Image (cartoon, rainbow, N blue to C red; front, side):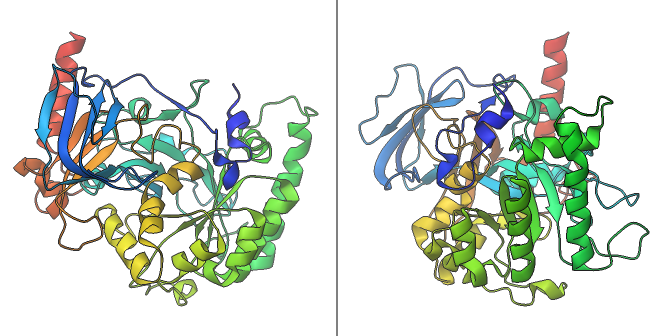
Amino acid sequence: MKLGQFARGCALAAFAGCALATIPAPLFAQDRPVAFTGATIMPISGPALDDATIVIQNGIITAIGKDAVIPEDAEIRDAQGKVIMPGIVDTHSHIGQVSGADRSAPIQPEVRAMDSINPRDSSIDKARAGGVTTVNVMPGSGHLMSGQTFYMKLREADTIDALAVRGEDGRMLGGMKMANGTNPIGETPGFPGTRAKSAALVRQAFIGAQPYCDGREETRDLAKEALCEVMAGERLVHFHTHRADDIMTALRLREEFGFDLLLQHGVESGDVAARIAAAGVPVSHIVLDSPGGKLEAMNSRISSAADLERAGVLVSLHSDDPIIDSRMMLRQAGLAVRGGMSREGALRALTLNGAMQLGMEDSIGSLEVGKDADLIVLDGDPLSTFTLLQETWVEGDLVFDRSDPEQAEFATGGAGTTSQGRSMHHLEFEAAAMESDQ
């Protein structure tokens, strides 16, 4: 199946039915059932279940509920007093030392973020410690088009291939990073000097690619090839945009060239929430409690997510790590609720809504039988500042365990959490993998 067959139309309600396939189970995927008992389970797709059980095996959820049947050979994990919810889906992050386009041109759609990500970087460990299980890793926004994003599962792995989310055709999945506003404007030759020039350059790039898309050019062109994927709906546009006027420019470009669009950041999106909703465009939002440093963020307010929710916009919350540390995602949801967002909506914005925006809701984002066993275990209410994340599981594998002092450092800081540091569980995984290859 072509990627475009499920990517096209995945902008709001049409996300239903968009399905992805993932790579085969990781090297150490658990084949013995694991049952968490006595927990408060928040499926997100339905009401919370008290004193309930969730069973996982071979990387997927096999049972959930108050009367869930526990296999005789299952490992029983007492989760009394704990809260279990889906792993966090971060729709915009820069973990893994990712980079993108260089300063040679303002539009570089051929660049792939996956070619720059370091799977061993400790920022990935820190994201796991924050409960993040799936992430859209993006190149920066200093270009009108800075390259192809990378959808990544935070499995315990040391190669990009093993972290990739794949379509049914086996392709590694990702979108296209675009930006407007002040970020791409500069004095470098070829770069725009105004907002008007920014939009003109983007239009010219899309128009210039159309003969290639129509098969009228035979020489392979990686940049035009990527632009054709965008215009065919095969690659979702992740559009960095802050101000209301810039948001409207992004909507006009989407209308003109027919690409699928996810607005990223949208600091002033609440001001044009009705327009965004009417266009059927989702928003990946960031809640900034300290927005200093960028003039475009001066109108940031914690009520914007609530404004989008009330307008009927499909809204997720993201970290933009390192702007907001990946370990602070639950805090972001709490701030959104303080700003007027519903509690249910804020938790969906961390999980299922982001999965829908990335076209992955058939496999992640909620706790349901048949979905990936991506879950987090908390010692209290997810939105309480006193709650600590205890465990993170990806496809049935425990990838973060606070009870392990060496892993706990990734939740609390300290030695080993810098870009130069590697956790011991990474090193042990490496040794075991090498031994299995011999």
